[in-house]
Length: 174
Ligand SMILES: [Zn+2]
Image 1 (cartoon, rainbow, N blue to C red):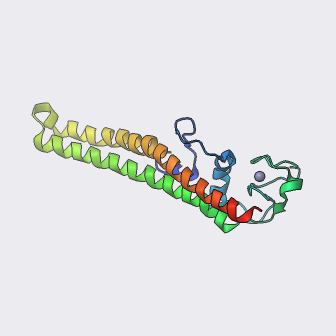
Image 2: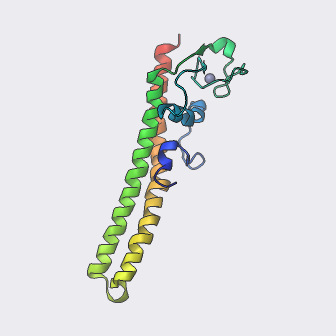
Image 3: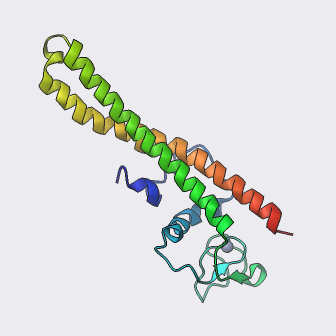
């Protein structure tokens, strides 16, 4: 779950992140859009004319943005520019999670070397240093990647996505 969770948007730290999107439906749509970006779902379909959430035949109100379908209308495909906004969020978040995890691993390696080369007495014992390398690598990768990286990445990615969506709204809504 640690490394690969990043791309699926599974570990969304919704409650922890300080940033609150002015467009809450974008957060609700993020996972669906990532599935669409990965082509796990059909490209064509029936989508809300306002937020481009996928609709079921029976929906009279969009389950994502609460628009009335009568007013918002429907489209049969999600515009590329809209998908790009979600992709920007996904990539930014993934980058922060992965580089955070990588920094954690580097830190554990640095500690390992420090202990082996300069560690006095028991601290310099290779077995202990190795335990620090493995255990520390795991803990630091979680801390810097899954925890810190995911929070920072969520904020930065969501901001980027939201500003792209704001620009989309400006240029397409009359
Ligand atoms: Zn909608």
